[in-house]
Image 1: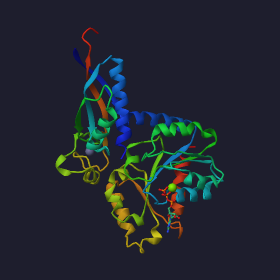
Image 2 (image 1 turned 180 degrees about the vertical axis):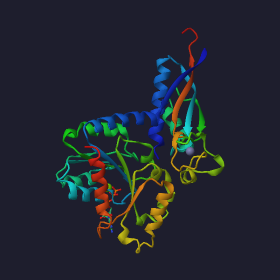
Image 3 (image 1 turned 60 degrees about the vertical axis):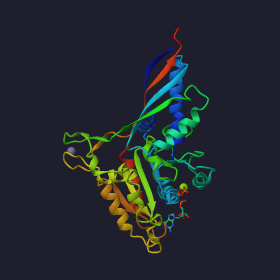
Image 4 (image 1 turned 90 degrees about the horizontal axis):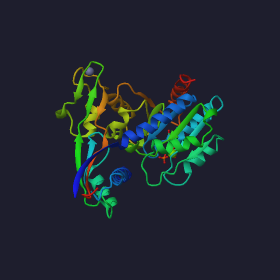
Length: 127
Length: 220
Ligand SMILES: Nc1nc2c(ncn2[C@@H]2O[C@H](COP(=O)(O)OP(=O)(O)OP(=O)(O)O)[C@@H](O)[C@H]2O)c(=O)[nH]1
Ligand SMILES: [Mg+2]
Ligand SMILES: [Zn+2]
């Protein structure tokens, strides 16, 4: 759906960071992707690859790091959900409840990341 | 040649959240209650906003942001009511984001407004991830999308304040049980308010208006 505009924003952030650090090329990008975002990883990679053509980022490896959903509840429970209880976003939204007390609307504390965590870049030796 | 690792820490959705929070504070400060009206294509978003302007446009000062993908079709419908309307052509985008709203807010007479309706792009997936700075999130589906539509898009119902099942007058014609849609919404989110509405018979329209009034009065 909106993978293209997300890819564009990632590209701009990576390139800005690379240039600020006088990189000669970007080697890899670590990207955290929450399992609850409506982003299709393959489409995102495809968009990034086509946007990055001809740039410092052209040959960069994209490391996608899946982030499982975590909740925090009034009852004090804080942690991941029971992964056996869901397979898709749709299952999850139906079954999402606090593993501690069953509260159907615990606060989600992770699972919605689209986060450029860090990048590895190459520099000229004499810099 | 050497390699170094640089921390970035830029989260696309968090960046949107931060912008949404700025919008939210501005709207709160100026006493404007903003409704993010999301929903399926053709489910009746424009219709229900028009009905609200018609019914309470004298009592409250209302403004509208219309998220048409192309052209100004919905914006022109709202302009007939003599309310300030900002049309957001999102191009190929599938949702409005907080940044677009920030710019629209600059063009609206916010000081004078009590209510701001933001008609999002017809889509039950992408708008879910993008807060705009609204006070209330409203999702509108209609019976003509089929009675599985709610369970197929649970995330948007998980995060909304009001879910509307519209066009219940034609439920029989399209062989749909509107109550099943209501039950699904409540199973996904037991705290959500759910209404069945029809522009044709007027069913539920009072409840919709009441919801807007109560939300707005709580703010003033
Ligand atoms: N029978 C019936 N038709 C309705 C009802 N509400 C809206 N409609 C019709 O449904 C069609 C679409 O309504 P809109 O209000 O334009 O829907 P929308 O969600 O704004 O559509 P988009 O902005 O294109 O996604 C129009 O022809 C309306 O007259 C209703 O309660 N019953
Ligand atoms: Mg419309
Ligand atoms: Zn709990």
